[in-house]
Image (cartoon, one colour):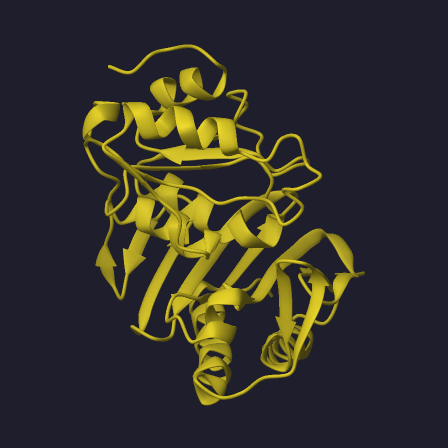
Length: 262
């Protein structure tokens, strides 16, 4: 038996209830790095999600943010982020999500990004489209960078990481209408699929952050590649562009150091 999109939606919404039960309360915050937080709610949410997957799909591999790789059948793999946007969550900022994706033989088949604060469920099934709370989604039709609103993020180890995205951020500030940073990569990418943002890029991200969202963008008519233009993007170093077909070559050009602003 293979997981259905409805399975993922139910799991994500169950985890979302855990997040909302703890939202606005004091938390046990631990630091995996200076800016890389984890709370007891991350752990509770992940325990719930892994429990649901193991109960229904016993032998599947799971790649989870807090638990790491849980072995199973290689052909069947889940990507789990129980709380994407932990820093926001710990500070009371209502921008965070649960994100789940299921891949068969290395290709994501279904994915969900659930924002419990707004009860917004972004989801997709390969070959069947993308939806927000049951309504079909499509990427924007913006064709010029100067008219685009973009979004990105920065690596946790930015002090030591030479590829910290600062230069790219500055380049896009000069040639886009605006650049945002929300603090939840899964929501960033989902907003591209909805057409609210025109494009997303990031140079150092984790697979559980973007496995669902990138499928949602593709099924909404968007283009996702790594920052070298390779469509096989779900592999290290997980550096990606997600945008509409018109903006993709222009964003790619900027990231490669050229000046293509129109």
